[in-house]
Image 1 (tube, rainbow, N blue to C red):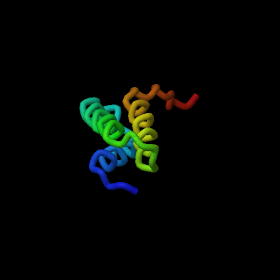
Image 2: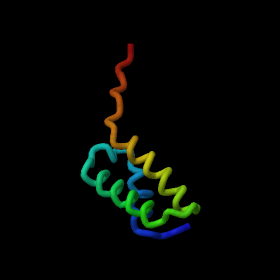
Image 3: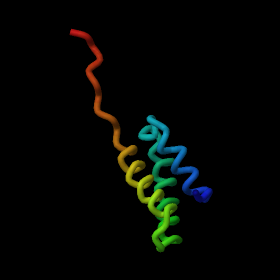
Image 4: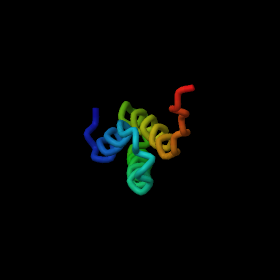
Length: 72
């Protein structure tokens, strides 16, 4: 497993359920991952992880749907 700072930042942010509240941070980490992918064009475990994290972070940027928490 690679310890590139871009992967570390993406891993940490992907665990944050409130990441959508920090759009600038998400954009910065996504940009870093895109740079990582550009720097590592060959197929590897790290590249596959970066691609997976990129998908997760793009989805994390969307505000979650409101849930009805009132009991009827």
